Image (cartoon, rainbow, N blue to C red; front, side):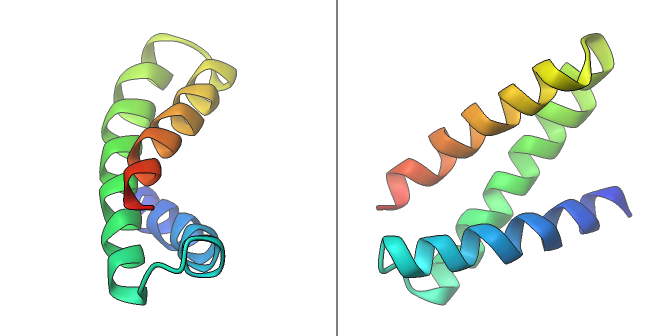
Length: 73
């Protein structure tokens, strides 16, 4: 359930931003958000958050988001 919520909330923001700022088609934006969510949930929430605190996991999510979305442009 947490994964689905993360995917929906990330998707609502990232899809719109990718479509507006990078002129990415909707389907490619959804694919990018899905990849971002899988990576961020698997690494950020399941590995980093369990071994550190929320601030470190949030920072790692931001870095992972940048690294995932940057090649889409």
